[in-house]
Every structure is written in structure tokens, then in C-alpha cells.
View 1 (cartoon, one colour):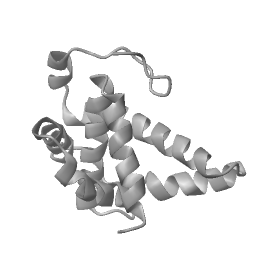
View 2 (cartoon, rainbow, N blue to C red):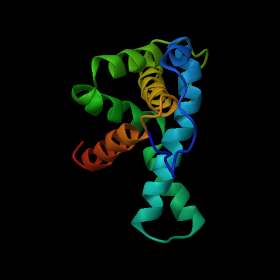
View 3 (tube, rainbow, N blue to C red):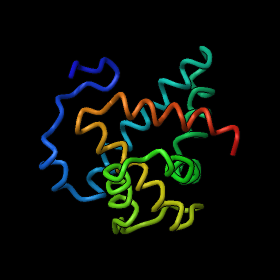
View 4 (tube, rainbow, N blue to C red):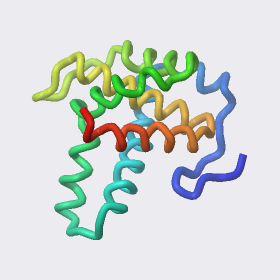
Length: 140
């Protein structure tokens, strides 16, 4: 597998990733998802930083991530769904204000899925799923 110029890092063995809990996967997945969002926002137009940030927040918040997780379900393999569920069912210990607990759990599941894909070197799949999220965002 060749290195990914956008999401670099050597893949970890599947057994190592399998041993991680959902919150740990969501921790790295949050960063991966944020990077994909920022790259997408930059592709829209060269804007002021404030505008870039505003556009990024529109994608990278618990409400939008929860909706995106729902749209992705039919596309996920059994393994991907398992990692999504591991994150969704994780005990996170808090819920951000202005978000429901359900939204936060769904968003955590999405982040865990992206964490799993990144850590196992499946960055192409992560980009494929993110592209689907972007394409279907205006339809929901």
C-alpha cells in the first residue's frame, strides 16, 4: 500500500486496532475527519479564515456527523459497521451542550469508523466515504 500524501502514517496491524476501544478510535478519527473537512472546504474557494472555519463547522459538528453516519450505513461493510458501533456504543462520559446524547453517540461512531480506516491504512476508503457524505449533504 503506498503512502497517502494527505493522511500519512504507517498502518497498524489489525489486531492492534481491534484491541482499541471506541473512544480511542474516535479520538484519532476526529482528527482525520477534521482534516478531510478542511481539505474539502479549501477546494470550494479561497476564502478568509473566518469563512473557512464557518464552512468547516457546518460539516464537523455532532449534528451533521450524526446525520452523515445515518446516510453511510448502507455502504458499510460488516467490519466497518462493527467499528462504527464500537464508537457509537462507547461510554464517552459527557455530552456537549446544544447536542443530544443520541447525536453525540452517532457522531462518535462516525469518528471511530474514520479512526479505524486511518489506522489500518484504508485512507482511500475514508476519502470515498467522506466524498459520499459531501455528495449527500445537500440532499438531506
